[in-house]
Amino acid sequence: MKLYNTLSKKKEEFVPLEEGKVRMYVCGPTVYNFIHIGNARPMIVFDTVRRYFEYKGYDVNYVSNFTDVDDKIIKKALEEGVSSDEISRRYIAECKKDMEGMNVKPATTHPLATEEIGGMIEMIRTLIEKGYAYEKNGTVYFRTRQFKDYGKLSHKNLDDLRSGERSLLVTGEDEKEDPLDFVLWKPKKEGEPSWESPWSDGRPGWHIECSEMSKKYLGEQIDIHAGGEDLVFPHHENEIAQSEAANGKEFAKYWLHNAFLNIDNRKMSKSLGNFRTVREISNQYDLQVLRFFMLGAHYRSPLNFSADLMEASKNGLERIVNAADHLKYLMENVQTEAMTEEETKAYGNTEAFVKAFESAMEDDFNTADAVAAVFDLVKFVNTTANAHSSKEYLQKLLERVVSLTDVLGLIVDRKEDLLDQEIEELIAERQAARKAKDFARADAIRDELLGKGIILKDTREGVQWKRA
Ligand code: AMP
Ligand code: ZN
Image (cartoon, protein in one colour):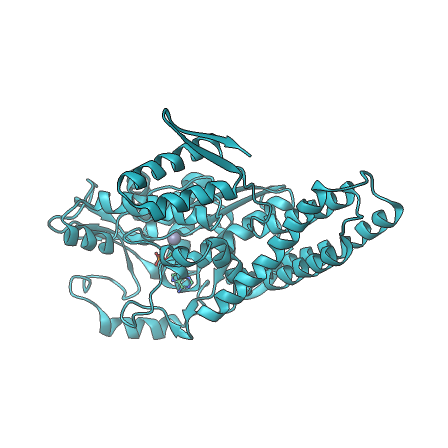
């Protein structure tokens, strides 16, 4: 399997640190609002990377943090007159809902920065002891000149950067030894969340969070570290400096970065008014469509979001789901059980689609080509499965479609059955709607249930239901 390593600027063969295992860290969002569709890109892309490793039989330890202490969170808390904690807790919960909708698996661990402060303080202490960090008036800085490999990830000309930064030094940071030195710990300002430390009551810098959480949950050396391309410099460059200086070992072997998502060919930003949250998209589309849209491009190519492209993705996904539905429909009315010789041969031919899918994924996770292989399989299904097919053949074709779409995190084999509890909840909602004289809603719920084979009967004792 080959993956493009930002560190070497080359595609490299993947060799795990430990046989059969992948240790992977993905920088997560800062939680001060609903996540936007740009944030969704690394979530979907690296979840797919994880799923492919799992498909190949690797045991993946996947860690992704929530940055829950940050200027933006503090600002939002002040605006709303609530605590930072309340803001971050609210948006972590909302983010998890969006992730579920996009079928992004929960990480093995989702650490919160605010729960790992002790470890960060220890790491900063080690850096000071080793001469890689220094304190000035309660602020601790990383001494970049001391770390010889500084700049190895971003391949930047550091002297140019230094002279650029020098003129930009903000007040309070003119005490730095070098313009590229960055903050590991900073004293609190009035009203900010803070923790005790040997240097001041304050909070950690952003970069140290990931170095510490990665070490704690994955160990000093990991296989893959990933995030959006804006994180290469300074965030990931600084993480490397901190982790390698503190631990004396290479931090991550492979650095993966997704390109940005634009909207209607423009950068997404609040000021341009083209900012879209995942939640907004979910009002219009099943979030599976958003996932499918994201996977239609290679993760290192810039991706443009537009209404037309979403419609095209919706249609594309429907083609796959319809093929799976058709197989299930045919299976309910089969005349023969076992595969014929001809079917065995036809089924053997589907190997070619699996091979094409795998070789696309092995080539730096080329999901665009992998999706094309799924479409080829779907076309084959639509032309060979029919009312005369055996149950075994239909079943095997369905399994094949599901096994590939599973890697992409697309749910095509939907279980339509409602659980008893869900039915009860819908009935309760219908009763409430009727009470509120919202008969349109009440009827819509009855129709929805009917569509799923649930028949309601209004009796004097209340509503009774049965499955059709
Ligand atoms: P943030 O909350 O800004 O730290 O971002 C969380 C993740 O989303 C990081 O990996 C970012 O690189 C990524 N990200 C932010 N904006 C975009 C975008 N427009 N396109 C793709 N990735 C993005
Ligand atoms: Zn990070």
